[in-house]
Amino acid sequence: MKSESEILYNQFSRAKQQQKYIWISSMVFVMGAFIAVLVFLFFWSKNVVVIKENGQVVSAVVQSREATFSAMAKHHLDQAFHFANSFDRFTYKKNQAKTLFLMDSKSANRLWSVYEREGVFADVLSKGTLYEARILPESIQVVGDQEPYRVQFQGIIKVDDGGFITTYLAMGKGKLIYYTPSYPENSTGFFVTDYVQKVKLYDKEQD
Image (cartoon, rainbow, N blue to C red; front, top):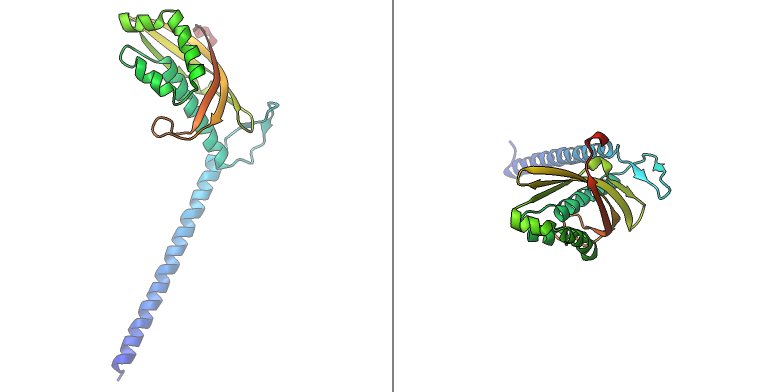
C-alpha cells in the first residue's frame, strides 16, 4: 500500500505532466496564429505598387509597410481634399478648422482666398449653397521614396445652389510629409504642403 507521501508525489507528477502538455499546446497555438498572420499580411500586401523618382515601377518584393503607407497616404489626401472643399453655412468654419490639421495654413488660405474672391462663401452664408467634394481614388499618385513625397490627384466638387447642381473637376498637386499624429483630427500623421488646385467644369464625356 502506497504511503501518503507517495500518493501526493504521484499527484504532483501528474499535475506537472498536465501543465507541460497545456504549455506545449499553448505554444503551438500561438505559433500557428503568428504564422497565419504573416501569411495574411504577405498576400494582403501583394498588390502594392511603388514608384521610383524616375517613374519606374519597383518589382513586387512587397512588404506590409508599403501597403500601410499607401493606404494611409490616400486616406489623408482624401480627407484633406474633402474638408478643404466641402462646406455649407453650418460646417463652413468647422471644416476649415479640420483642414488645418491636415494641410499647411499657407496652402489652405491660398485655396480659400480663391473661393472668397469668387463670392463662394458669401453665397454659402446668404443663399445656403452647398459644396460637397470627394477625391477620385484611382487618380491618386504618390511619387518618391522619401519625404517630401510628390502627390497629385483629381476630385469632384458638386455645388448645390437651391437644387441646381453644377459639377466641377478639381486637379490638385502638392507635397506630403510625415508629421506628428493628432488623434482624432489627424490620425495618419501625414501633412499636405505646397498644395495648389485648379478647377474646371466637369465634362462627363471624360469618364
